[in-house]
Length: 253
Image (tube, rainbow, N blue to C red; front, side, top):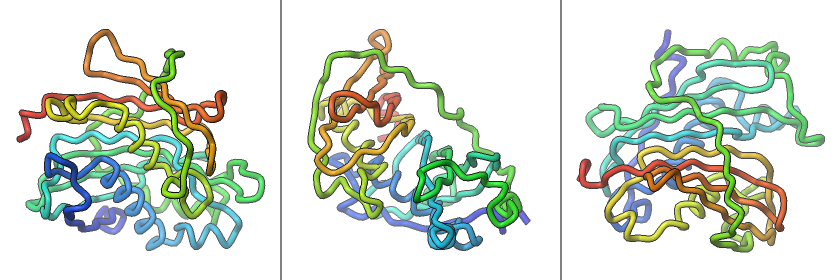
C-alpha cells in the first residue's frame, strides 16, 4: 500500500545540470524536487491542472534539502516523494534522493499551501474534494530535521539585482528556485572548491515580480560554516529567508 502512495521518478545529471566540480547543482535538484511534487500530485488527482479548475493553486512555503553527496555528470538517480501529513492550511511533503544503485544520498522536506488564485488567501485543504489528499498520507522515513526558524539580522546589503526575464515563471513572479540560485551566487568560487552545501533551507514569505529590485543580506554564525540570508524587494518587504550549512567537500570526492 505504501508503494502506491510513494511516487518514484528517474533522472540523469546532464552536462548542463552540473557545476565546475562535475556534480549536480542544488538549483537543478530543487527543480527536480518541485517537478516530482507536481507529477505525484497530478497522478493522484490533486495536481495543478485539477486545482486550477477550481481557481486554486499550490504554493511552496518551506523547503529543506540535506545531501550527503550529489550525483556526478551523466549519473542516473531517482527521487521518491510522498505526503507526510495534511492539515487544514498546509501539507508536508518529503523526498528521498537515491543514487543509481538505489542507495539514499539525501532527503528533503517541504511545506505547501493551497491558495485562491483570485484572493491569494489560503484554502482549507480538508475541504478540497472532501479532503481526499489525506488518502495518500505515508509514514515513510525522512531522517532529517524539519525546516527551522530563520532569522536574519544583517542590515548591510551585500548584493542587489533586478528581476529579469529568466527569473520569471509561468505564474508571473520570480521562480522559487531562482532565489536559491541567486543566494548561492553570493559565495565565492573558492568556498565551493573547499566546501559543499550540506543543507539548504528556504522560507518563502512573499512574491516578487519582473523589474523588482532584490537586495541580499547575509549573517554568519560565529565564524562557522552556517550562513543565513534574506532577500528583500524594493528596499523593504522580505521575500524569503535561507539557511545554508557548508561541509568539507573532500569527504565526498
